[in-house]
Image (cartoon, rainbow, N blue to C red; front, side):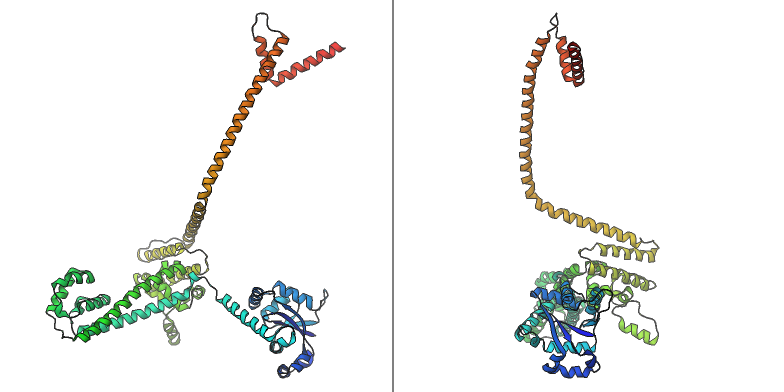
Length: 534
């Protein structure tokens, strides 16, 4: 049975014929030994046909199709032209060796050509790859290297291609940095409190917020210089005039030790670093909120931006989170407790990262597990909508949040919630209405200029129609004037009434208007003429 080898290179498709397969196939080691030597390998494998790619874009499309296990029309035509033809109803006396089993199954399904992919075929294709530039005389080694390099770059670039506005990697990095900043700011603030507390220990009890404490430590500097004139400035920092007065009074009777100016300068610089970090943390949180509204708007509106971002970062990406079932999402972040419970045969955890949601905190201790299971179900739905829907909307997240609120009321008060089918139908209707409004608004702006032109055209058409109507009326008047003398002539020929009354004229006018009467009089006249002729 003959064996053909299909080789997909960066420059095109190549088909090779392997001779002496029955003798060599028994020992793969013989093939490995013959690969290095071109003279020995050239006796076993010979080039049958080569079809170069038309362009770099064509090469990229063919490479993508092969990687996905799809046979393109170009590959099918290449195989059908260069392989021996098989008669209908008979089996092929050859087989095609391929490197990708998926492509081989696709070829055998479509063209009924038997394909194989085993260790022997892979070794032969490895030898073909090694000596490919030697088989094709017109192809230079440098050309093949350039084609491989260009195709590799374009293939990798196409695989990494994504929508810039929906990059979940930025959310993952932002939430990691936000958690790190929270830890750093807390540790640095404690260091500022302890350091400045040697000089002004009473300030710790008056001001609890770390950010405000750092600002006051930078503003006050030496407590001995603090007086009542500084109360308005302290009130602006603290936000309360009473607290500002308490700070001034505590500074007068403080038990702290004196600090040298150099030490105060270092404390001020460190306090300024803490202030800068706190301000940057606020900006980073705003950035995270905007990114979550672009990437996962429904998940953010359901469970919050921070918890949603933590779920995405723990899963690895929004796509991985969408693939997770609700039971996995429920305990996401509590893997250690889960495996410890499975090992010790204890109770498994009820919730993981979703515990930070406000819904579980509002639920009673008896219903926390139920609430976690229900919330995980809704988060799974929201993540799948965000991942696979093309429209960026928060309608589904808002409706799912309403369902969770109704479930809380059901657990607390016993109020029956709405069915999921009805809620999703209402959400779909609202989404379709929003899309319709957007479609109506976009062409309305474009058609403003067209309306002025259209109005002018309509005015011209109206003028033409009016002129045409006036012309037809004039023509009718002319016709009416021409008809009147004809009627007078007919009356004169027929003769009038003896008394001069215009009775016959009226009858004649009536007869002219009624076509049936005319036809009757004409038929009578014809009969009289025929009788007179007889």
